[in-house]
Image (tube, rainbow over all chains, first blue to last red; front, side, top):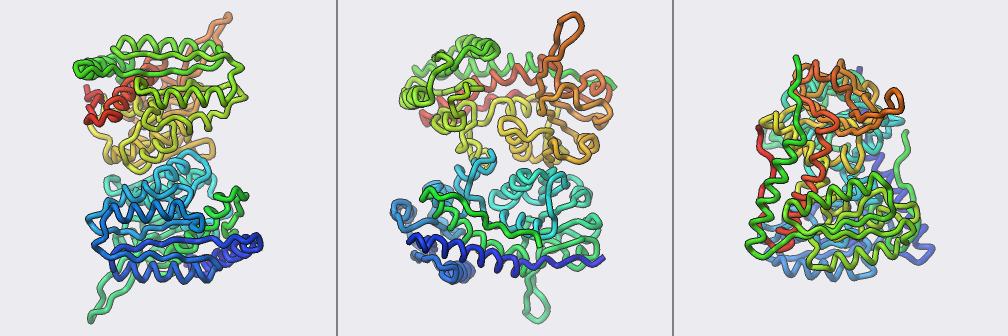
Amino acid sequence: MTAIRIDGKAVAASLRARVADAVADLARDGVVPGLAVVLVGDDPASRVYVGSKKKMTVAAGMRSIDHMLPAETGEAELLALIDRLNRDDDVDGILVQLPLPPQIDASRVILAIDPAKDVDGFHPVNAGRLATGQPALVPCTPVGCVMLAKTVLPSLAGLDAVVVGRSNIVGKPVAQLLLAESATVTVAHSRTRDLPAVCRSADLLVAAVGRPEMIRGDWIKPGAVVIDVGINRIEGEGGTSRLVGDVAYDEAAAHAAAITPVPGGVGPMTIACLLANTVKAARARRGLPEVVLEVAAF
Amino acid sequence: MTAIRIDGKAVAASLRARVADAVADLARDGVVPGLAVVLVGDDPASRVYVGSKKKMTVAAGMRSIDHMLPAETGEAELLALIDRLNRDDDVDGILVQLPLPPQIDASRVILAIDPAKDVDGFHPVNAGRLATGQPALVPCTPVGCVMLAKTVLPSLAGLDAVVVGRSNIVGKPVAQLLLAESATVTVAHSRTRDLPAVCRSADLLVAAVGRPEMIRGDWIKPGAVVIDVGINRIEGEGGTSRLVGDVAYDEAAAHAAAITPVPGGVGPMTIACLLANTVKAARARRGLPEVVLEVAAF
């Protein structure tokens, strides 16, 4: 068997197009959603990522509001900025790029963001709404994972889904989403006794551990769908490097029915889902009904 | 094999004794925790339950504040009462007995309770804190389930735990607690394809479905620990009735290493954990360090 390669780039582009349509709809009512991105310090990877977010926000027809703060910014100063953004009616979404410098307590910063503008979905109120099945702003990468799975699976109901990794930003929220889709959901992690066997039970496997190619081909149930969240840089010969996922792609593709590549799989979905969350927040804040931006099955 | 019968009555009594000790400690500093219980209407089962809570609150040395409202109470009136209780410094815990009459939206009422006084742990802020590993007031029955499991299992780390049921008040929070204990956690439910097989994979099985004796003996892995949350009344001969769990006890006891009976298993733990939450809330509101009230392994 050779697996279908799930094209995250194409799915993300399709989602961004839907977002742009939704933004155009809002513009007819004089509403232009605004996304405020806050970057503290000059971590090169964060700068690149913030740059992409800005470009795609503007390309979707929304306003991008950047706040680039020096690395030595104090927590009080950042909290004061968030307070201003919370009260600024032109701001629909607030994203504070992580990681933050050591003098700033990230969890306090996340708590300070108005849950209605929390487009990263990291605020405990949004985590709690997700956990209890209420309308929520849901973390972007987990939403992207489920959208990609649904491009190849008409329904997730009754499937045995295994999530490897239990982080607050991917593993746990993706498990909540899969449970809401009526999958039977197992969360496995570093303390799991027989991880290969647990993975082998999965009709849908989501890998979010951050360990390069840890999940091998013979861990994949024949015909499974594999969503690989990992993005790991490994050194090659002669000073080169390349990106690989948490799954050994070629091996896994020999067993799976469908699999996301790295790069070009889950990665592109994250910003697209961030844009979708910004539209969602902009509509909810104005009491407008939610529009479904989900990408339909191919 | 005949399973150990996990004596929830004894474990609950031991927990209540620890709570009473913690209350006595607080009393030396002039603090007497207060638990406000609100009952709307005159559902007989709710009345009995509220009566037990009151008696045990007082027996533990705390103040019990009752608000018995008529069945026709409006939502606004109830919300106004909750607002008063939120602002009343003598009230450390607020419990609104569910179910509420149809004219009142329970989710709006839960949202109105100050999360710091939410001793039922149903507020989304507490659900979110639990889901993201932050200090939280956690729903009572799930905490009781984990405490009972830990009386017979020294550690849950690496165990295969299966939770049957995905309710917000039991299934989902118990799954979060088991994950925090580093079990590999599967949540199964009505859409699960082969529930007997999933149950049979469990070293620790938590049943919270509310269907009398649905889980049969041959669904139990030999040597498993079974925690039965169900309390179902079934009709017997000659107009009699009896309580049974979600697990067919006698059958399951032939396979399990340990199992909770119904009644006398999880049931008694719920009020004991409510009292423990009230102490926790009383201490946290005053900035006092948390005391561990958990029952140690026997």
